[in-house]
Length: 369
Image 1 (cartoon, rainbow, N blue to C red):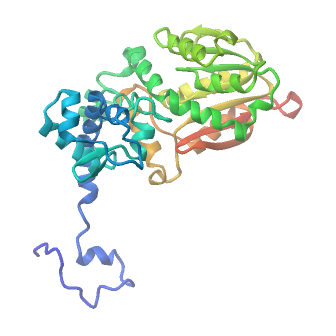
Image 2 (image 1 turned 30 degrees about the vertical axis):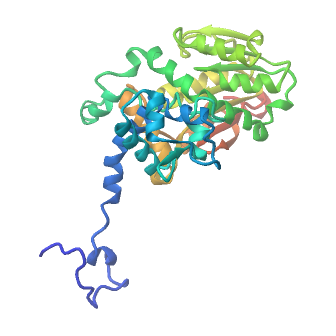
Image 3 (image 1 turned 180 degrees about the vertical axis):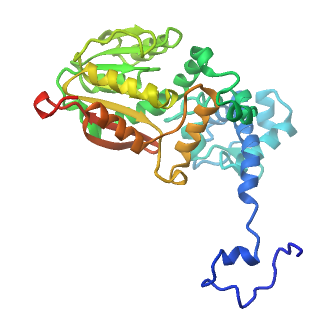
């Protein structure tokens, strides 16, 4: 039978029939397929715009949301020293993607671009966008990764090169989440907490706690090629003098038993797989004093994965680029925490798409591991 786009609706096609009656007579749209195809180009459109400085140039021209669009493609091309017709195609693509305004042939920033895509935006993601997918060559070989059970060129072979750029790109967003988390965690009510931040990256969690607790101190850990990012960011936020920087693999560095009030595992567990995550949770348990708290932040996959597309795709990014990385579910994480002995589990969302488990180590009388 020919696949007519609009076959006649027959009387037998009623909702009471078994099956999917609407697709029985009208084929589903191809939009989801085209959205995936276009995703590759859309990513590179945005990366090119950031590399060229399109958003910053518009910001410098005063092209703030709510004002008249600031410039034509020809004017921007002169300033950026690029081909005008090629730039216009890029600008139109950004407008179609909802990342710029276009009115009467003139272009300006919209709210999203001003906030997330300018270098000085309130929640800038400008440095995150190019590195967020991981090594692009691993995506082109994803089928091979699935056949072999590991990527051909894993990040694990040279982690500092990749993670350094990633932690710099994510710092602003995670610092916002860590700062907002105080509304639910209330670490600012602690007098002089001692914090252990494992795999800290730029140390946004340690910074947030120390800024809220003037008497607090922190041990900040990451790999040798990354920890200098934390040295810089803690200095910029005025807390470096209360930090000890401990370089090395978080599975192997020395950690004082029962020496900490707060342990942070911030966006590291999805790189480790189940066994590695369990070991990190065990290390956190051993490091915490009774009534100490673990903050475990990550992108947790929902019971039905389609409910949490962002988390699923972040897990796929880890799978495409690392030896052990996968998405982890909230249920798995809760089970690992409870198996280690943690109690009073809470799952919080300080800002959109940023979740963290808060778990407490009980007093010995309340049960030990």
